[in-house]
Length: 306
Ligand code: ATP
Image (cartoon, rainbow, N blue to C red; front, side, top):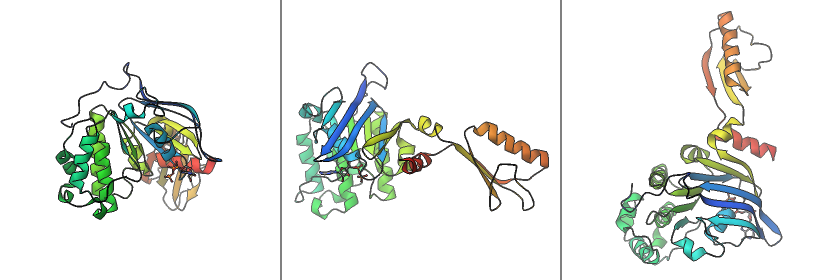
């Protein structure tokens, strides 16, 4: 846990939701980028907003941050309306934008010093330089940073002072594996301190590893939302096994080469039946695997359905 992080009440207490969105619409001229979405983010949870390119994720985050006006709908962030109470919200929320807005002429160290003066929450530049592996870049101008380094500086400002709510737009895009791991550590540290984190990502494995709950957007709408368990439970599980050359599979089971692949709404029932079939015939199975649906399965089926 960070030195600055005081523990907030855990999820599900009387403190209520961190974010509530009802019927949010956002238009860019004639084009409606967000088409009536509802979102609920609980305090202390990590919520991942996933979706196809152009789905409206960044637009939605910008509304939550108070940077973009909505066309319709109700939005509450930490109990405040970001459309009219952005200043009050700024003291309680850290934000990482897809494109950071730094002063090119300042060094990394100066940028963080300046940040400390602008933000009400106390923190130490040294802590963040270490956390995001920027110590060696302290005296480097922002204009000379690589893309990944800029992103890390951006993250450092977002988590400055361990705010109640941190909103991150694609925090790990373009980061090398080590920087990505550090970012995950920083996110987990915030979580351990009871903070709420909302992030977008195109890395499904990242959402699977970090998120308590996810929403998947497509063309301005939320098409799936819930905990990872709930989301994958709505999709069939799978099992597969390789059969010896001379064995014909059971009726209704198809072979792909020598491998049977079965999609099942009741994994225990269907796998038991299959193993019973193999046992009754003395069939030696190899490479037997069974797994629930993954977030990737859900995501790809959405792309096919919508
Ligand atoms: P990505 O995954 O590609 O970052 P996203 O889900 O974050 O996408 P948004 O950036 O919110 O999507 O964009 C949603 C839609 O709104 C897109 O079709 C985009 O082209 C459009 N859009 C975004 N900003 C503007 C703008 N300033 N003016 C007009 N259209 C915009």
